[in-house]
Image 1 (cartoon, rainbow, N blue to C red):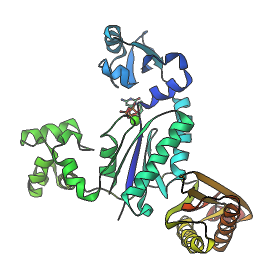
Image 2 (cartoon, rainbow, N blue to C red):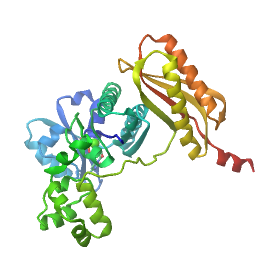
Image 3 (cartoon, rainbow, N blue to C red):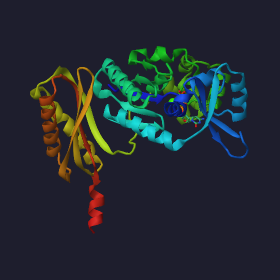
Image 4 (cartoon, helix red, strand yellow):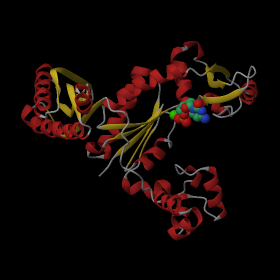
Length: 358
Ligand code: DCP
Ligand code: CA
């Protein structure tokens, strides 16, 4: 059973600016992409939720946004976008998310899909994502909304449900009801043109779309889009994360019970090391650094790492190093372990190595 989360930072560029400008505490914030043609030419990149209440939104001309701001109750500040800065915040946030998951797919500067199938239950996945959101808040002072579901489509739409700073969990049995009354235009991937064509067919909700025979959808939209609409209306979507550039490979798993005992943990480390090595192998990599990741009963997360003398493509050094790191950690903590992870990093490419050798 796949469990996938989607995390999406709230009014991201505006939130980043708020962090470094305490003097804007009682202001709304609008981020602008100035075209440079004349003083206020350009478009709004994003608006925080206060500025949204005044009717300002992404894509709007800056001049129009300023008119709306002039009529608003709150003071609203207009700032030029600083993408380089937002990029550095984004990288740090993605690092936090990656620490908690087997795999992530960074989908844009402020959103990622998170592989949580190894959690084994929606309740556990929810705990993990709650921790992720808290850590992002603690370390970067920005809020994130999250959605959890059986595939990327449902997770993505769930993260939109309770924004800002909310989380929505849609279990497989709840998918149909979650989608039923939703406007078709809210179905991820349905643009204004498709929505209009559907309206012409008297389809306004996802529930309505589900009633349309697939043959009719194919006749209207063509094979690919027709089938895709049919599947989406049923909440079916991909369970596979795309491989975004991999600097490390890890597997993390919730133990069947919280424990302090090495003999409980050792077989899990063995399996995790095997899973990680499978992925290292697939990519033809060698690793030089091993980490063990621990989440305690109190949900504190710790990482312990060790660099090997030389890069290797063998499984045993990964298992041995992880085992040592775990036993060292158990020595120093009095907490029980709830989740355990194994990570390989500092890759070099064996094929590249061989070519260089010639
Ligand atoms: N962005 C942009 N122009 C757009 C849409 C977005 O420059 N038309 C930028 C600014 C956003 C960031 O991308 O902060 C992320 O886009 P989102 O669509 O996720 O929007 P926000 O994060 O701003 O808001 P939300 O809280 O709705 O996620
Ligand atoms: Ca966002």
